[in-house]
Image 1 (cartoon, rainbow, N blue to C red):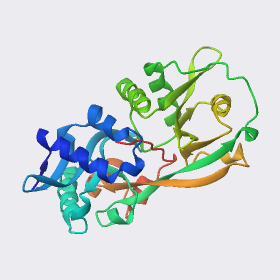
Image 2 (cartoon, helix red, strand yellow; image 1 turned 60 degrees about the vertical axis):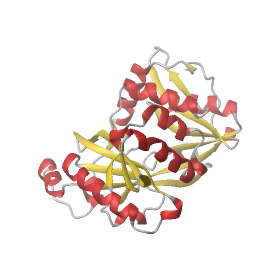
Image 3 (cartoon, one colour; image 1 turned 90 degrees about the vertical axis):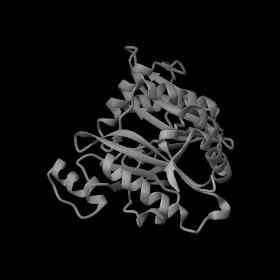
Image 4 (cartoon, rainbow, N blue to C red; image 1 turned 60 degrees about the horizontal axis):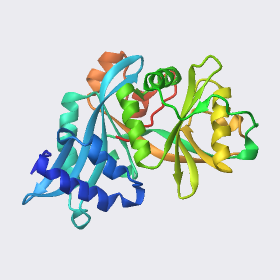
Length: 303
């Protein structure tokens, strides 16, 4: 039986996450179920009142081709280890995607294994990259104006200014950034903020120490000076750091000695091709064509 999750299912879903995602947790699972989890976002496939397979589908607003549209994100797709390869997840996805087709124009998923989702109409449209930047790569400057003092209203402002150069961006508000601060803290991370000489926020970065490596999992900046100030501050904490950015951000030009790796696969599904074509006034044959815009894509959501 496939249904929306009931209150009593939360504990079983939490247990499935702990079993399946222990390799990539860092405190996130507990925090997610304490703060973000909602029964109405969770779908379950059950047999004899036992949750066999589950996933979370959360609603989002996305800016795409100059319009704000209703979208959704699928996360936490998991099946009990002893029940895999029996078709349960396939059944669950078909039901969830049927709901998507009636509620959202676009659905996205961060896929560890993209091949799993191609049969459902998803295709890879966006990847991020990691740059290993060392202290010697960054011109030294004072980190004046760099602080851990957060102002959620101004974080929304700088995020909106930065992402206006991109497309496919999820809309964020003050509640989002307040929750993000709790999420980062729960995983032992920090959010560092840069202010310009007029006292206006000009950038921020989300920092984690992962197995001894300082990782900047999100960095937003309005100019190269703000970027350099944030990196200078981070490289006072560690001799080197890993910086994650979109593929479109050509930081290699600023840091030609940085080691670059590509990370992650954002997959997109167009839930109603005809409605999408009428809304935007162009035809397409592939998901990649539907997502091609004059601006590069930018995406960095976890749920």
